[in-house]
Length: 269
Ligand SMILES: Nc1ncnc2c1ncn2[C@@H]1O[C@H](COP(=O)(O)OP(=O)(O)OP(=O)(O)O)[C@@H](O)[C@H]1O
Ligand SMILES: Cc1ncsc1CCO
Image (tube, rainbow, N blue to C red):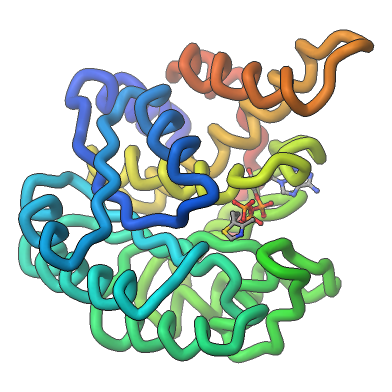
């Protein structure tokens, strides 16, 4: 498995897939840049008049709910339906679901109307989709001690997709098989958007393979490994600003070999 995942890095760089992202206004620029850093090509288009055209040329579609509106919702439905028709993988990032009541209704409606391939969110967000209370503080997770493996497994089975619960360890499940990834660094929680950027990375990998479990593992672990290496390079006088720059540097340099050396996977079946 490690060998085939490591090959995805080269594949993304060679194919330079187009990743259509309907995303939030807080982290949009970072998501575009991380997509470029891994070797894919971002296009951020939101308007209902444009999304059908844009998605029909894309190789993956990201739906990120971070700053939501009725217009965004309509755009997501339009783009999602075309992506389903064309067999383009859709990756949902249900930012803030559980924290903002109206968002839950919209996200559940998206999940009823469109076939979603991968859902990535933090513990609170995925717990909400699994039918729990999804306790959170704004868009950040509140750690409840709930079983992340059970949450990922339940979401995967409920929506027939791959579910990723990110956190101190990341859990990836397709409802039958669960993989636990132990990479990461606490600083990843201190700059906004590392979850959103992980979703953009997952979409980049999902656009070049039919094996969406491997794409999910590649995307989420890349952020964890990059966080570790970015922190390791910090001097005593450097903090989150340099950490963020280092994070982009590491992701630019990441290839299959670097990934294999850094990844810390624990598998369960
Ligand atoms: N306590 C932690 N220690 C180490 N790594 C962490 C920790 N919490 C999260 N991470 C890593 O941070 C990245 C983002 O995950 P997180 O769950 O914080 O996303 P998020 O809450 O959706 O983020 P955002 O909404 O800011 O985009 C992942 O790569 C995850 O592995
Ligand atoms: C801070 C924040 N608020 C809405 S979206 C977002 C980015 C992280 O999800």
